[in-house]
Length: 260
Ligand SMILES: NC(=O)c1ccc[n+]([C@@H]2O[C@H](COP(=O)([O-])OP(=O)(O)OC[C@H]3O[C@@H](n4cnc5c(N)ncnc54)[C@H](O)[C@@H]3O)[C@@H](O)[C@H]2O)c1
Image (cartoon, rainbow, N blue to C red):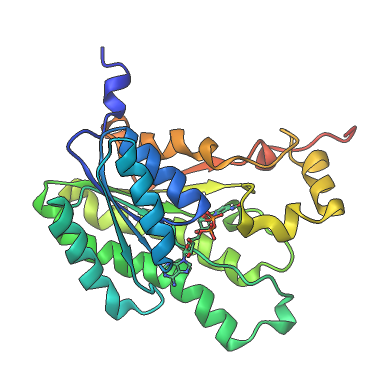
């Protein structure tokens, strides 16, 4: 019977977009410590360089790369560099993301396009670009970092929620076309994770109170609490799982308690 070794990523090559971010850097370090060579992409060159250095100092193999994913003409070059530097691509974590919290009536066409470009369009075209490399390797695993907002909405996040629902839908539609080539595509939908990205929420006292009352676990997640699901989906531990979503929400969507 296989044990923990089914989660091993020894000999695997992983690309993480948004690799300088709180969640992306945490996932990159976890993939590297499970044996993968990692290629961290971000808009923030200093950030990816620092994370890649930390991974190398800990004995891993990491490369940093900066480009703006909202310009999809830069994607092919980025993915070619990843394949060349690592020797191939087996794993892609689509983690780059942005939000602009506004009421629906104040969302501009520019806001809409900016959020769609990073969260949805880039995830689509980065996945498209890794396809030939994964096919050559005989398969691969793509994990879209979607969000609980694709099924449980919050005010001021209309466009963001739509793009995250699209990321989960893409995991299903890509799976129908690519599983025959051994490429599995899944998503995770985290609830609120305590990062700078969500500070406008947890940083405001009455909003922080909301988590205590309405999230059954009574708090936000830490980025480390996403690692288990991502290692599962990235590794052979999930070899029969594709087109699925793992919700990591502290019990939020399971239901509530009138007495809290
Ligand atoms: N924090 C949460 O509560 C939460 C919950 C669910 C899903 N998510 C998703 O997780 C991902 C990471 O979130 P985080 O909290 O670590 O935020 P973060 O801001 O720390 O990380 C996002 C990263 O994406 C990069 N990025 C933004 N625009 C880019 C572009 N045009 N090109 C390349 N890189 C770009 C940023 O530089 C940043 O490093 C996002 O996709 C977010 O939607 C976050």
